[in-house]
Image 1 (cartoon, rainbow, N blue to C red):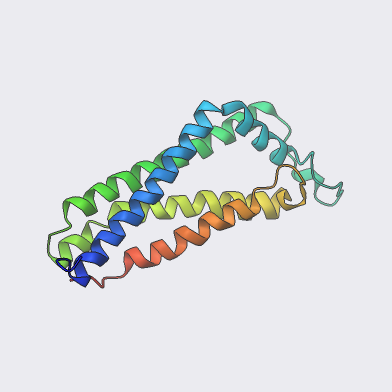
Image 2: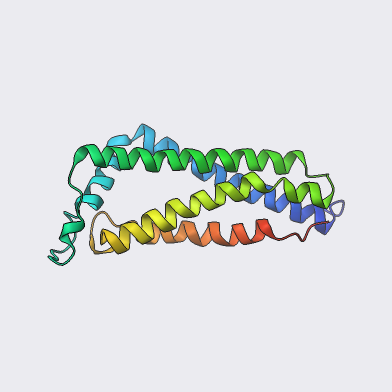
Length: 169
């Protein structure tokens, strides 16, 4: 390890962390495509609000159309494909430019940053904001992924901040 400078180690840590998120995205995609019916069932219950406590003030928000459930689920899968692809390509760009100048390496972060922003949209906006606040997902005893999504955002947001910092030389 003595042959690595701190600046090189920072670059490699950014590459490695992006690889971790890319791997996570690949596993999520695999799960959503291979086990489509289970994950579709989850989406259907959240959108239908059929496993949350009865609340007449917000029950009008429920979406009970299976066609819309499939379309919304495919929209989510599409976003997952997008963030995973951007993260994979971003990881490749970072690795490819790991020995480049600070400005070139910093510019190589673009695809990673786009991927991280899309991932935050999926896990924060779609799941935590819309799922919890609009569809009352946190009231479901069975189909509640609020904490799971929060843990993912707890990884992605600091990674986004870390990626955008121009601390390596």
